[in-house]
Amino acid sequence: MKTILIPIDFSKESEKALSVGATIAKRISAKLVLAHMTGLNDSSLGTAPVHNATKKLYYSKLATKRFDEFLEKDFLKDVLVEPIMQHHVDFSSISLLADDISAALIVMGSSGSNGLSEVTTGSNTEKVVRRSNVPVLVVKKNKLNFSSETILFASDFKEESLDAYKRVSEIAKMLKAKINLLYINLPGKDFRSTKEMDEVLFAFFTRAQHPDPVGAIKIVNRYADFSIEEGIYNFSQLVAADIIAIPTHGRKGISHLIHGSISEDVANHSIIPVLTLRI
Image (cartoon, rainbow, N blue to C red):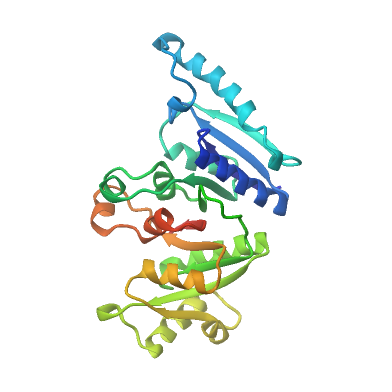
């Protein structure tokens, strides 16, 4: 049985993630493991003053009560759910837990972030995206009904994206979803002629051991835009994508501040779910 990990802080965002996770679990007969990181968002549990000596016990009991209330959802009917209490605030612990339970997917809710806070501190979801070796599906709290019929995989199709391509192919197979492959062609120094794109794609599919590299080239959508982010958004609307899948380097610290991360930008700003795959 597949396992889906969902970090929970009892917020509306994590409730949305739980709803999406339940939909996927029903589709692929998976188990949901819900992890609450005590201390991550203790303000969501209550505001009563607590002495340090009894804080851990207090929050543990209160979180257990909140878990029981949080799981009273009609959409969880017939879904196998396993709650776990994590007494850590280190976001790497989520990635470690995902590895320990052999999770096929992490589903996280996000409200998105903008401006200075986005580049200096980022969101909790971003921190998991940067650290996780397991694919992370980021969903927004909105009224869109989740579907997994069509996955849009956007890539530069360099060798470093091979593993991400294989993993998204496995996820698409698991979800019985169609994959649309997308190459964004940018103006200026990053512009590639058709011949140059074909050479990149042929090398990629050859390394991926695709049975028909030439045929695979023909199914890659080439889309011209002024930025990768805009190209992904615009093309996702054209094909009515249900999920945007994109590789991420998992940059941290000063590297992230200087170079940024397209995957995190897309995950922050897209209204449809974004699947990040670390490379």
